[in-house]
Length: 139
Image (tube, rainbow, N blue to C red; front, side):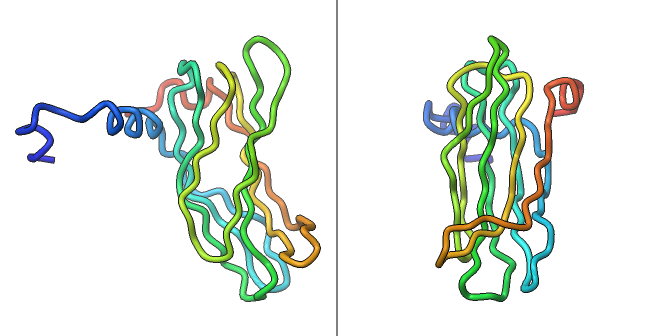
């Protein structure tokens, strides 16, 4: 941190990355399957951002070698309508970043297990997150 102060602040890229992580939502975990679960440590950008970002780290906590962790976000746009992010998955642990195509009022973060062989998803849990819920959170 001291190096950042001495250097005169963050670079544009570092500022953008820091801006993506305004609110720490915390863990979102799938339901348990027969061999374990998937878990994501979730951070949110500001809901007032032109492009809303859900980011963090996704963890595969399933002992079954054919099962992996899966995350996807459904964005509810202020202008109306919804849209899905691309899917991110890992069979170990991996950082993720899911971005909207505009301003949102709500995001549904969905964490599941996925079968590597069949590509089928199961044991999903969806956490709906509204702008009003995090509006007065400290930064």
